[in-house]
Length: 535
Image 1 (tube, rainbow, N blue to C red):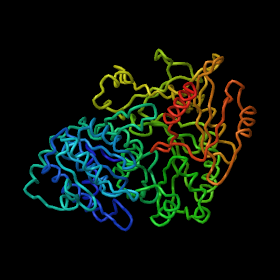
Image 2: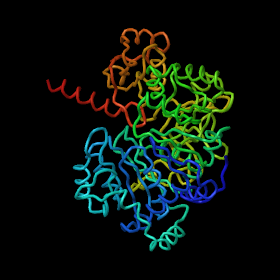
Image 3: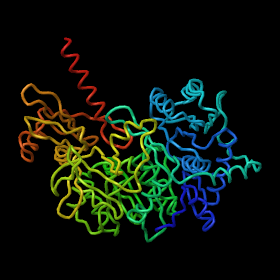
Image 4: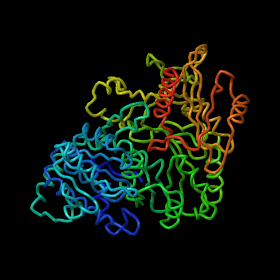
């Protein structure tokens, strides 16, 4: 599935529109868009952006969940030399204010309705507070401050054809193409900037490692459009490979399984929590998996139950099981599991660094450590972000002059050069002089029957400096006792690693990428500590 390097994201829409115009490109419910339609919509939308005053280097923002307009506006913005960014309608008005204030978009495209909520008031507020927004385009019923997205992008505007081609010809492959704000698990979100070159530098490898199919590529995309999985890995990755991207505007376990069957999905990639939620539905046992050629997961290690169930399905259908390691700054995966990896390797490693990419494990002085020793994961390659938007200071903290990116993730390499990810450097804590890696403890807790998810945080202790506080979430409808968890931990962990407090909750705060929001838990603990001191 290796494609020629066309230099720019939107060129792949044009390529497939020419080579297979009638092939399905995007599917959303009953809406089916061919590559010829995709190219037409992209060009008309690009001309709408020109008419709205979008200049080379400007930003175009979209506030929505995954739907066809996401990829159409992404490609259209890139064709006029603008940088596209996605925003989640799940976020609060203040969170939107932060992103709009930082990115200063010229055009904001947004859905009017989301999950039963009318967003008109919030959108009008953003339009009035941020004069950078020259045009607010709404998908749905219009209101005074907005214009109709459909009406603006259906116009031919033939008089702008030459202008569009001239603008496209002026774009450089190193120009800013995509802005993704990190989920902010440790503080304010940072805007990660990717160029056409860095996006293609990652996707050109990814399609060979994840998307090589016997049947035509049909991927399912139900991630938020402010997430690297939507923007690069699945969204643009499918366009690059000339496949069909089936979009869902929210994650619903039962609806997802029905879509896999109905649309004959061949690539099914999710975070482990999504698989677990699907396992608990009445629909799951009767799901037809015969079309799926690859199950992929990322974001966190897969619990034993996920691996066991996917292995059972794969043994019957011949599907492959794939995982890897990556991040927003890396533009997606940079390491991949290998064909034939056993369950133990899939459970405990993120595979090997991809050919042409570089990875090393370093100490606090950024000196490479011996094989088998835990250190910070550093990577280098054509996939790397250009930097953090408006924050050259933060960029310099994580990218050195030689082009190495220091991820803040901890890990080690085994004798086969497989990468073991042990957690975030910022999450590691010391207890009685010993280094504690929360991910190791979380893996143990998540192997307990009935446990869906766990999060371990270091909290102050008078004697040991810090000790572990574990938050545990059971499967919906099931229970697990803290005493059971403690006993299990004492059997499988050294005493100094066993959490000193274990708290079972029916729900834990989650980030859009499916990970536990540890920042929210830390803030909750800090607030409780202040209240106790004040009482």
